[in-house]
Length: 634
Image 1 (tube, one colour):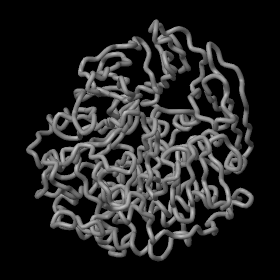
Image 2 (cartoon, one colour):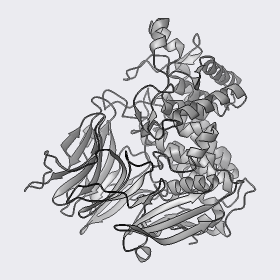
Image 3 (cartoon, one colour):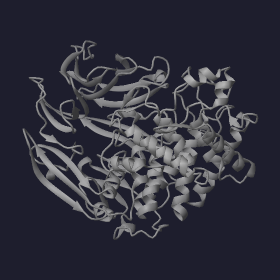
Image 4 (cartoon, rainbow, N blue to C red):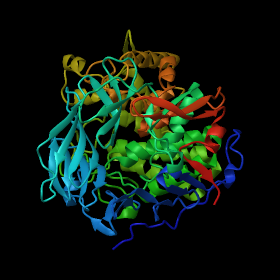
């Protein structure tokens, strides 16, 4: 049996040098530990090891106790799925059938029963709850199901079906311990939209927006009555927090945050990186579920951005760990190289019709490689020659891999025609093209750098505008014409969605000479238009499509921020801890701007009372002393 807690021999030492003139915290170079006291978690910045409850590993995602049982969830480099063990014995989550789905929450009950959530990217795209490897509950596509608690007698879930209010649902366990398929609705949220909930016995604490209030608030809901009364606190920044036992108030701990734009940007960026996924514990992942391309790539960019702006070695150390483990997750070193999956890539399983197939899609590879190259450039001497060469070799290898897919006539890349993908053979979407252009632009072959410029020029040539700013579509015109699309049908094709637009803008920002003042102005106007919808933004650039917080602009949009965009990010936005949003906060942080930050901890019961206040006038002061994490020497 392989070791769950492999410590990699090729870890690199922390480099104290900084490429900028920003002042680092006093004695920052001597800090080699990140400690989260409330979670009992410690990260060794030199080795990259994460330790929790006596368990150590490079990518230790979860360590929790349920009664006398110990649950450990961990990965080693290149793992598609984590290894899950209970009391040292490995538990299978669902066998090979798990391969085409994204893994969600994992919970262990005191009796040793294990449940987890998974969501399918293909097929019916349903979400499922499995108990001890067996599907017990299925939720149709478009339903958001969150597992809140799993005990010896019940499973509690927060379920939001498309077009319906959220519900708190209980599924009891029968005499054999199996989760019943029959739901019991404990609470209907009616006109309220819960963002985060905490269950304390018969009391549900919820941070949520309600139709009869202008601002999000904290609600205390008695589940015995199911009545939603007035909020005990109203604040858009109010959220629950966990404090070390000695510092906890008698009531529920609730935090509010205020400050200048720089203070708020840094707060959400730093806590998103150091108080969540602490120690870059998902950097070991393969890209089977897209965790490298859509999670780690953004987190690495955020770490590099904060290092560039602050010179604090903690961000450099974690960025180096991320780079090292992402390279260690490539297919070549994990025995996955095939005719369709190059050794320098990170193949996925979630996009194929047949879950046995792995695909190395160009967009995913370029996202990962571009983040590696950008971070290494920012780290300067802190990115070792070995890592720098590995990244350069990866870029060259990927360019060669997709050369056969370049359509000279169209001047654009096609999607490989020999893979199990519904758009195989088609001219690739614009976010693929622009991201690949970002990979090509710094390669030594002048023909490829010329091609990158040509792709970008073609991208801008297809832009249009209305009174609300820039518009462009998901597919290039060449892709539509390739499928015998008439001009009238082309006119009926929807515009790009905000998420894929952000991906394109991430790489477009690397071509500043091609993004004109008119482009910038048109993008800012489009941002302003999208933000008029509040937190429930529309899917498409023109305002069409479904609305919801998942479409809130982040990621690459932060490279061309309007004043309204910057103002909105001077506070919490939807998906505040998602990787692309954490990057946006880091990207927007201005180290030269006025820094003011106040954290107010409240003790909440039937009302909320002040408990403790922290005030900061610099990012250095926040890093030196805050209620989330501590930086310490050995």
